[in-house]
Length: 591
Image 1 (cartoon, rainbow, N blue to C red):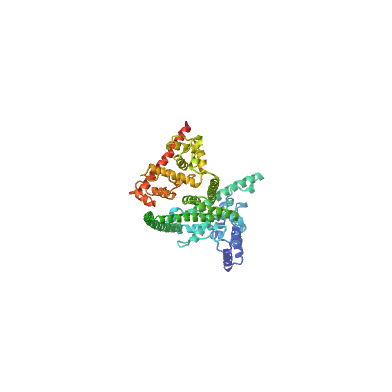
Image 2 (tube, one colour; image 1 turned 90 degrees about the horizontal axis):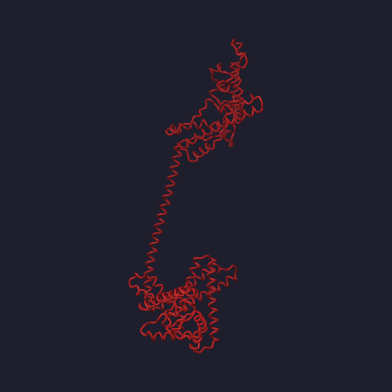
């Protein structure tokens, strides 16, 4: 017994799979030194067996080993055969006076066939694979629902004998861990069975008369074996699937996993709800802050209306902020340069933009840089630099030409109109206004300017596009003092004709929206800053706002309600006049 225990422990510690033959050889070696009394069972039907029907006989029962079957060792099988020979040999029976069947018809042939099968490991494995006493039944779902472990544990233990690998895990109990259960089903879903069905071959190829017949028999046998093997694997798979579907532990694990996921989902929902509440509180705080800020801005707007100096400081801070923003943005992009020299050059250009650009232009440029990519920002900055350089060059050229020009009076300069017709003091400011009203880029610009002058001039002289182009070139050559003189005379004439009316749009400096090629100003004109504040106030306070014009006037330092209303009407008339001139030129071109 000690030898059996040692061999069993050795087999248990082995991690590799073993074939049936290897197991048989190991058992035989483990019991070579074992001396035990072999108990054989009587087989009452032994004498009735037909030797020709040997395939359907129970070889273990023939040798008296029906109670041991596949667990019997080779030593036990040989001992059983020896005992059966001593008892049933024909010579001994004949000597006892028993009638013996001649040839292979005697039942003793069945004993010889049994030892032939069971002593050969390969043939024995083939017979064990189709052991007539083995129960191939699989419990139904109804049987397993009530007593799962009692119904399925013996079935898995029975079928574990077919495993090529050792130590097949048991079904376990309700208290088995998830890892044990998972390992159990993993082994059985990947079950490697050594069971084969060559014993059931209907044809014996050794009886074939030729090679072709042997091949045909072998082909038929292989097909039958494959079919039975497939049925066997389907049987095992059905067993495992049914057990898995009924296993209460699987249901428990799934319920636990579902509960865990539900808890996680609930935790996430709670976290999300808290986040939403936090966001809502933050949003409400922002709204409150915005409301307070708005109230503060309204209060500041009232203060600004009373303190023009403070407004100028705000404007100064705003442009300083935009300049700093432009510098910071360009610095973050390394001034769009790939090397130090390019970055230094771009740095100088950026400082030039900060010195030359007004607030609205800086804001527009910063907005473009914030929304665009680095390459788009580089293009926008370079374009702005080109425009500034062009303006600087233009101013420089105008200054040089003004110094070289020799003009003493406005009349001398006004005599150079187109078509031989002189330009009076009324037409010059009108031309300046039209040039500012229709900037470069306007469709059929000079025809539109000429048409605008013909509509608003009282001289009765019809000016052509060529006339206004020539006169515009002459006006560009004037010195700054001469331009101021033209504006001054036009304003004096306006005051004489409209003594009771405030300044008109003809003398006003064009707003940022209507920037043109020249900018002539006087003390009574609307400045660019005032124009921008007015336009912003018109957007801030729509028509439905109570006391709208009082609030607009409060937002424009130094201007009254009447001034703002008058300026608004002038702007409306200016836009209407611009559209009318453009439409008239368009209708002429279509004709």
